[in-house]
Image (tube, rainbow, N blue to C red):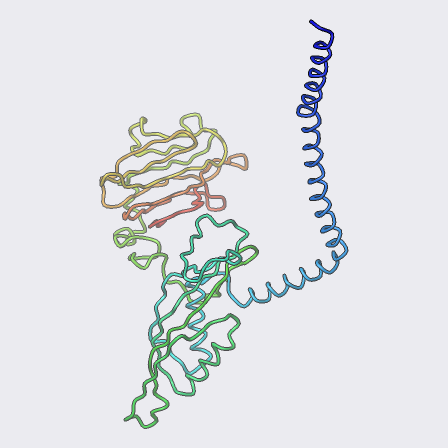
Amino acid sequence: MKESDKKILMVVAAIGILVAAFFLVVKPKREEIKGVQAQISELQAKLDDLTAKEAQKDQFIQETKEFNEQFDEIVAKYPADLNQESTIMFMKGVEEANEFINDAFQLPRETPFYVLGSGMEEGAPVDTTDTEGDVYVCSQNAYSVTYNGSYDGLKEYLDYIANYKYRMAVSSMSIMYDAEAEQPVDECSGTVILNAYAISGPDRTPDVPTVSVEEGKDNIFEGALGAGGAAVSYDADGGSAIASSHNLVILLNNANNDTSSGIIVASSESNEGTYVTSSANSVQNLDIQITEEDGKNYITYSIGADSKKSEILSSDVTIFVKSSARVDSEDKNGVDVTINNGTGLGVYIKVTDDDASSPRFNIKSKNGAVKVY
């Protein structure tokens, strides 16, 4: 190969090395530098923005405080919910404050219509199932009221609504009077559609109405307080008949008695296979469940993990508690009973010979129709 050709090849190789170095090293570095410079520019812009905001920090804090106070002031004009108990007491208060009688009014369920800060379009459906606990949900209700009263009383009623502690609105009203009455303006009647609103959300506590109406019985569908209609048959003898015929027996004695367990609960006293027992010298939690399954009624009784279940073939459920006086201060045996009656049957309990000063038998809670003699 000629010397000139060698020189040409060396020049070409050198040029190739320079081109490769440019594309593999220089160009990527330039792109990297441009990217870093762009990030620097972006971060500088953020820094300038934050620096400007930092200079206005006290102003922003003061404005935020003022806005929060204004927000709280507006929200306070609405209740946290539209529960029916508070609505009934409001209607009662209307009658006490004015010559205005609510002949009848409807209590529909409240309807959510907006979530504050959501930017919802007007009329869009509101789904509150997935809303977090820090959102404010606006609800409304429309009460249809049929009334009677004087014309002056009607004006007082409208003034009462306008100045009520919570925002309400009368969306429609009709007025009629008896033209043949001696004082027609004293005998007005008609209907009112009263709109009420509520805002629920963080730190919003619903009003608890003060109800002074005496409760006559636990269940208005029962014949006696806390018992079913058939209670009359047991009321006659104070439940004494339960001692001879019952669905469940509870025997409570001194736990130090060597002859038997201190606590015995059984659906059949003569069948030890139905026993749930305890020999501990302490108060045990006894759980009694009355349930309906596939058209049949059952009673399940449990102390801890020891549980038994028996079908109820009678028209009611009777429980006989045979207790005893305590032997001394070390005799601490007893039961705290939870009774859940999820059926339409009445549950009647007869307790005998329990310790007068420190009873062994105690009902901790009960649900459903349950009566104790």
